[in-house]
Image (cartoon, rainbow, N blue to C red; front, side, top):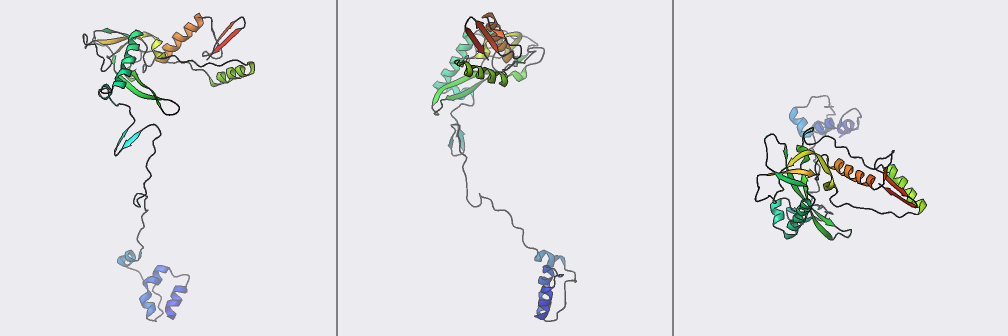
Length: 274
């Protein structure tokens, strides 16, 4: 016992050596075995097992994901009520009516004319995008279907050139709001339905017929776009050009510091449009 006490109490002797040499210390010889080399088997046996972290899933703790966008979860399938394909949308009367409304709006606007395809024509695709519009309380407002062109297939110099469209500066908005507050003006917010569809194209752009609405008389014909459509690279610029030219013809003046600010002054009437 004296030998074991001297070995364990020595600050220069490692704990591993004291554990390994316990047999010699128990015999009372008092011989320090810390300087003797240990075999590989003894070293491996003396190392403590490596503890791995215990996850919440191993303990049965599961925190399900909470969906706040109207997604409903059924077992391993999630659905948000929005179709993923045209075939799926055609099976629902609500989505089919929404697609028909969008197609009728495009036809009334004179967005395209059907022409036969020709060799060397850069033909772009289009797709339907479906979205459920909801009110502030989460109730369904309407079902929206929009036809979008795949503008990433456009080629520069062939079916588009300039794409830049100016946007009103935040400093201009703050200035106009401060003027409205100090002078007691009324504020109005306007929304133009299908705004980009009013832009007139200057380039020749050819697009495939909308999926599900191909003309039965000319199924192989393509759409030559006369008006801009969502997804085209030049659609924002074409819309701004149409809007600004119309405002200037009505007597508005574009600001030199911000081209997205239009002012109108006539007598006591003063209007600012951003």
